[in-house]
Amino acid sequence: MPKVSIVIPAYNTIKYLPDTLSSVWSQTFTDFEVLVVDDGSSDNIQEWASQVTDPRFKFISQPNRGVSAARNTGILAARGKYIALLDADDIWAPTKLETHVACLDQNPQVGLVSSWTAMINAQGLPTGRLMKSTANGYVYKQLLVKNTIDCPSVLVRRSCFDKVGLFNTKIRYNEDWEMWIRIAACYQFSVIPEPLVYYRQHPSSASKNWRLMQKGYAKVIRRAFKSAPSEFQYLKKQSYGHANLVLAWKALQSKDKDFKLAAHFRSLALYYDPKKLLSQEFWRLSIAIALMHYLGSDGYNRFLQFAYTFRRRLSTQLLNHQSPKHSQNWKPNEIYF
Image 1 (tube, one colour):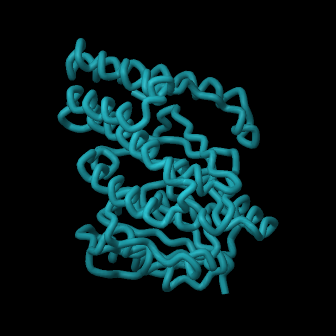
Image 2 (cartoon, helix red, strand yellow):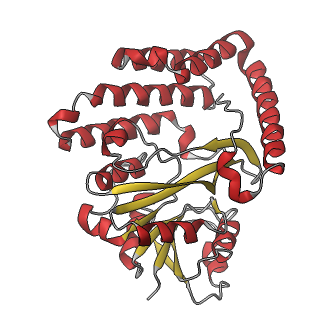
């Protein structure tokens, strides 16, 4: 029986899946099985899967039912003690599994372990942005306010799913956040302070769709606080405040580049949580809205290209002066526009 079952839901991601699987085969920890769950793809994923000869690989096909249903199919078919979740367009560093397995082995009170996340673009090139998860210890209260696990590429004890249930298939966005809240109500979390996951951003990503995000946020927040203890109910307004700040960013990042809609969501964020006015995140957003207003869409895009190029160069210089094992000391220029 493999110790780890790696569940990879796939929907029309054959462009990225071979690189993702290559990063799995390169893991220093090798006692695992891989379950790729095809969620009704229309690409040639079945032909590709038929050519994978590694005995640890298993291909499962199902009609299109969404990422939650695909993950659930993989979890139910998994044989491992630990369940590793991996999206079909993301990439793991070679020591990802080794460090996560060691963490769960040594800390029986921990139910889920994650790591820091480095962002890459559609071509697999680093953007220079590093996401540092703070989900460490008893994080239920923290997760009620916002999802502090930036990428759903985590390692979870199988017993966690036995206790709290599978992913909610009625939630089409933020379904991972909803699951983390349920697990955090029963278990501690842990974070490996190294960028061991490379999270790919591309134009077709669901994270660019603010309408889908808005529905997902509403469902998760309502469900989370319906079961939250009375002493945590005051956090509900903070949760809505953070959600609206995120939606404001997504309105700027959407195809329409709608700065008026972004300003509307920013106002809602202050309505729910006036303390947001004192946060750096609020003022970064306000600067971005002003730039879009005065520079227009083309000017704003030119500014972004300059900012991203500068950030990539800066992060590359920093990385060149540090060994990989000391990557947790890397502090890239945090530009969020």
